[in-house]
Structure formats: C-alpha cells, structure tokens
Length: 395
Image 1 (cartoon, helix red, strand yellow):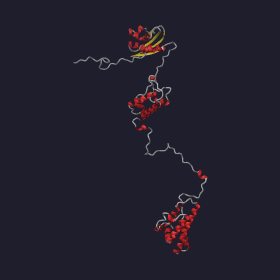
Image 2 (tube, one colour; image 1 turned 135 degrees about the vertical axis):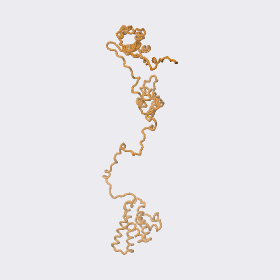
Image 3 (cartoon, one colour; image 1 turned 90 degrees about the vertical axis):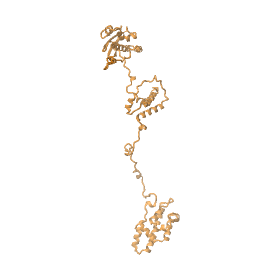
Image 4 (tube, one colour; image 1 turned 30 degrees about the vertical axis):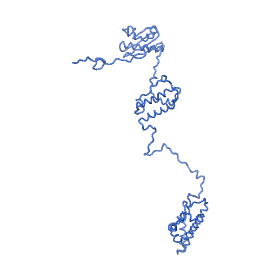
C-alpha cells in the first residue's frame, strides 16, 4: 500500500473530529500548539487532503529546542502508535476482513510510516562511531603542476611586455629601462665631457639589425643622449646595472681602444718603421750613429736627383735636429721619386719615435706622423686626363 492509498484510508476511516484530536495529541507531545503553525491554520478542506507522509514531514521539520535524541525517538514512536491505533479501530468498523487482512494492512502502513534521515532531521545523522583510523586514511589532494596545465584553445595569453602593441616593443623596453636607471642614479657625481672615456656607440643601422625593428632616428638620438649621461657617471661610482645597460649599446670593436703596438728595438739597437705614400712603400731601419743614410744601397744623392726629394726623405731628422745622431738604412719600392721620398719620411719618423717617444709632438707639428691618404685620380672615359676635357669646337 503506497502513501496515497494510506492517506485515502485515513480520510475515509477517521472523521474530522477524530483527526483534530489526533493532531492535537501529536502537537502536545512535541511541546507545540497545533493552532499556532501556519500549516494547521488552514481550513479543514486543506487538512483533509493532506497525505499522511506530508503530515509526518510537517511535524518532523519543526524547529527543535536542542532536544535530546532519545526524546525525539520517543515522540516519533508515540506519533506512529497513535496513527496505527486509529487505523486499527476504523478498519474494524468499516471492513469485514479477518485477522490476516488486518495484520497485513497494519504491516503495510507501518512500513509506509518509516522516516528516513532526510525527513527526521535537517542534518545527516548516523549511529556509527568514527575512529581515529578513519582520519588517517584521509589524504591531501595531489600536487597541481601549473606549468603542465594547458590553457583552453579560446584563452588568449597575456603579453609579457606593456610595449607589445607598440611599433618597436624591444627598443621601447630598452629606452624605458635607460630612463629608469637615469632617474635612480642622477644624483651620483658626474665627470666633465672632456674627461669621459671615449666609447664608440652602435649606429642606427646596427640597432635596427640587432633588434629587428624599424627604429626611428629621432627616437634613437634621444636614447643615445640618455646613454651618454649615464656614461658620464664617475667610473668609481658607476653601479653594476648601469654598466650592464651600457654594454648593450657599445660596438664589439672599439675604435678608440685600438692602440698601435709599440715598435720594438732589437738586440742590435735597431728600430724599423714602415711608411706609404701613393703607390710607394718604404721600410727604414734607424740606429744611433753619425748621420749616414743608405737608400736601396745608394747614398742620398744617388737615390734622389732632386734636392726637394732629398729634403723630403730626411725631413723627420731635420725637423727634430737629429741628422747627425742616427744612421738610416732603407728599402723603397713602387711609385715615383716623389712618392718614394715622402714614404721614406713617414718610415723614418716612426722608427725615430721608437727611440725617443718624447719627439712625437714635434714630429706631429712637422707633419711626419700622419699618413697622406691622397692618391692619383684615375682617368675617365671621354676626358683627356682625370678631369681635363677635350677642347670644345662649335662646328
């Protein structure tokens, strides 16, 4: 017999007065008044159509004032006995069945009145004891590897740099880093621009190739001005982050640091110098002596017929007043007499500076230190010489 059949049997067997008495008895045992609840204030028609499980549910879900478990069980057992007794009396009056039918009906209705834990209480209750071994079996969740976690296909990664959406993100990051360093260390002592170590910075094309971005010339000029300010910090006070930032803008080969190797003096006291002029090459060995000069195994007068060429060949010795203090032995090849004489001037001056380095300023003023890069300009087609054109004729 299901709950609906039980409710119909209760409605047919019990009158209104008997049902009211039954409900009042149930409410009195629970310590509540039946007329104070909104469910029992409804009219008699509504109460007549309430099913037995619904009545039990309404009574079981009333708020309890910290009652003990034993009182709750006693109340529910008494409530079930009242309903079972009422049904037993009504069935004896209205049915003509024997004892077996009555016992079967009572057993079916008693099974219907069994309440589960979800009906008897709002909290899940159990009669089993929890031991300490049960808590030992509880284990923590496994470690979650966030690196191996794959993002869904619709998720968009966040850009690493705020300059990601700019035209030159890598250059902008470098520029912002230089600005931050300058704001942090602008209070450090600076040295004058004349005393700053000369450094060759990367040009615009090198920066474009290195970064792979179309860096504008004006932007790089502003960045280079900040770099030079950082470079002017005193070397003993320059922080490590500033040095690392400046290294990224320096050339791999520093032209100002390429110092020529000093010319050695061999065990015979000789210093060799090499000079070039136009297509002529001269090598001169200079040693302390009495002023003798040998050029390709000839004397100075035999090697150069013109007086101007003779003066040009030994001009380094004459400008420093060392003509009678050193002997010169030289080999010259290529070009004409003028080119050979001027090439010999540069070779003798280099060998002389190996003996006396203090003569370099005097030799520089005399024009014997710097090589003359001028060469003969080639002849062009349609011209008589390199630049001379043929005479123009009208007809």
